[in-house]
Length: 531
Image (cartoon, rainbow, N blue to C red):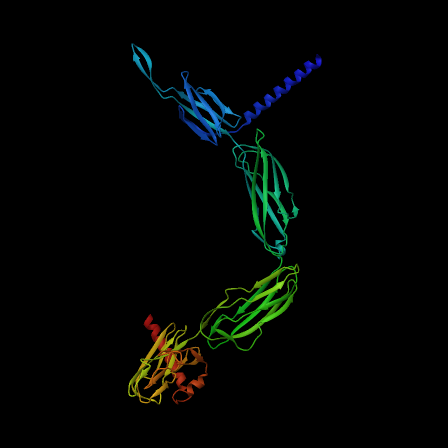
């Protein structure tokens, strides 16, 4: 009997303790008001955080019957008078500010009587239990780490935690996933205990050893918190930071090109290679190619095989000279390397791309046309010759055309000396000759010489048009020349002395001096006119 009484007493004490703990936990709940004085008429409802609160009915005692439902299931119902509340599982509660029967009254024989017109409503406060919520910020000093750099051999990580929720967190634990990187300082798990609402903790700092992968690798450092609220419900929050670890090997190919260039002057190119990686690289096959619009000054082999130890540099693996064929802008192709790494992986690398230079100079194009290709003996033929400067520098141009022995000159101009502006400046001459010999006659090519202020000179000749005098034009496909228009941009560089000797027998060098002086004067006049 005594044992039975003792057991009963123990159960009573246990029950009282549980009830006390439950009441204490309920008092510690941090409520968050979601609605203040929401007015609900009979049958109306409002939804808060997934819970549906509905005014089910009203009675004559100025009470409203409220139900709390979620996902179609009715969880709690109860009557509310002004000043009372009803809740469910300490997760949500409804407090009645006012319950108004809202009916009409009339006076009859000095008494107030209620009519049948009434529309009751209740003004309700709706509160939900606050929950802890962590904002986790993971920071590193850099976003990208180069495994080839000694300064990037470690990674400092700082983790900032703030409880941005509506309630305190208890039994908080921080766990860090280092993406399999070795920890040099700190640890992967921290017990933080209680964290109050809006509390910001001191940053958690750890240091990791940076890996040295064979390929560029993205690593995700993750920080996770677990905690409970006053009712023991569990919560989990995460934050992360992705960093890039650059590969352990690296072959840097540097291509250098002289920048200030002019037609008639060579362009110097050199290629060097540096092994900036952590491993030796053997049997590197290095290949280069020539930019379009230039040619090698002398024959060169632009393919070599070499090996480089870690940190070793090979200077001027290629060194050659190019001669520009036309002026303009040039983008040099990359120098390419292929090789096999010590782990058996194939690798490749290219030189600094977008290596651009500009070559200055005139580019003279001569076009010779005839007004017809078939004629009879004694007919007149009109010849038109145009010289155009498509380059980027002005030039003095001397053009001279020749009448063939099969024809007689009638009228017009067969030559000119003129400064042609860059980017399309041109000059045209026209003359008439009479054809007096039958047959297929090839007109002489027209010749033009030019000179710019940088003393770059050259000679350009046109193609030679063919006309048919007193004979039919051959059938299509048998003629070796196009009809009417011929054009050439073949430039032959020559010395100033050669130009002078060819200038109509004048004193050697004197005509070139005159051309240069004329170019300076006309260029000045053109610029003044533009101004």
